[in-house]
Image: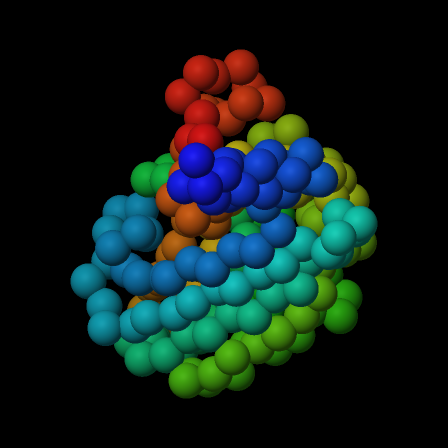
Length: 185
């Protein structure tokens, strides 16, 4: 009987975590193989993010190294795996194309950090996320419908990428919020 009690604890804790707004911590590995189309590169990276308890901000750390071109910019995009999507948030840029206050992308190996709030969300409007719609971005992140990537001079469309996807449990469009019965429990 004690064994059954211990098995129920993780299930109950998972239910509490989802009831309080869902997954809050994300860690993704960025590689060229996740770019669309895939890129053969020795570059690697990681993206760590934590959604605040009140859901008003995201603290992040982006690391990248061994880019084959000079780093140009890094973003969070709105798009499912194997599909390119529009930019939602600038993480850094060296092209002067980001919103005011966007940090520069230093050469790697490096880790940059920052905080994302509603003021940092720029869209993509054509995909239904208007500037400032932080709740829409959070819903997309929790649904596995966003990715982080780093663009370089050799690969301006993106050299490394990692899908932000709740520890490989979510598949964009297959979440409880969208009526699917194929939800990881």
